[in-house]
Image (tube, rainbow, N blue to C red; front, side, top):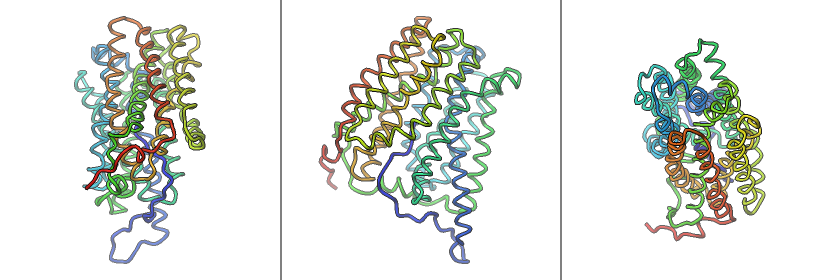
Length: 432
């Protein structure tokens, strides 16, 4: 999941970009109104960044049955988010420079609405996968550029806006996991309506973004803020940094576990005799535990010289959770969900470490692009392998053993990434 990276520097851009007009600069009341509208747009977009994924998990069995989808192909479906986040996330900065970040986020929100709505009419596995990729392409560009929008237009309120963004994202993730099955049952039990309904909040977000772009009249133009920091400053040969590679491998391990969990945990519970509705609630528990932890963990991590204790604790929670799912999946269902959810909080931890491992905002931006790009690419095979192991063995013992074993290299690599180091001290700056 690509997300904002903490930085101690405060951008110096104006709170809102000037609106071109022949009547002089906009009034304070207009600037405040436009700022409030943009804040609402950011929150609505964030709510829609995960339902395309988490609404599918509780209904995956029905989708597979109707589309004759094999477990291996279902594993490919679980890997699609990582593919899209890596490929389209790399493209987002160039799109923002060409069209402006607000317009690109609006287009991304439109892709989410269109992809989620259209895939509910898919008649084959290939079409379903392609339309899911359309929705996730929109998610990818919004993931990258919403932080840019925040830094560009809210330079004095970056912290509160990042908090709003993160909480709205987590809320949308958990809500889709919790209510998709009850909504589907209330609408007659068909998975197509159950998945398609999530196009509606994305359509609402699209309307608000379009209104925002029109009223601000500044959709086009060069991106500043985070994007500018990434482009400017001293270019660092990131690939020479051992810390950068450790962070990238750590990110890849945690992303593999997170997307394997989102893609398969509902099926794991259902195969153990847990109802579809309850499995959706358990997935919601896994997702929602990140809301309070994401607010507390970064602050605790920043106060320490290194973050190795957090790496150890989160890995231990995950190993215990997966072992519990192997031995008594239904008996301790809520406890295993809590432990796996805590383990997935390695995501805000690695984002915090990215911010601490570089000395400048430009270095943080370059490090973030490298770590998340490489990490998401590395995570692609994981969910596919989980599906293949499930198909070949007919059970979840071996797939869960793989997910638990993956936490061992995550722990060892994380201990290296969590040391108090700066990438600038490990590399020789590239010469012009």
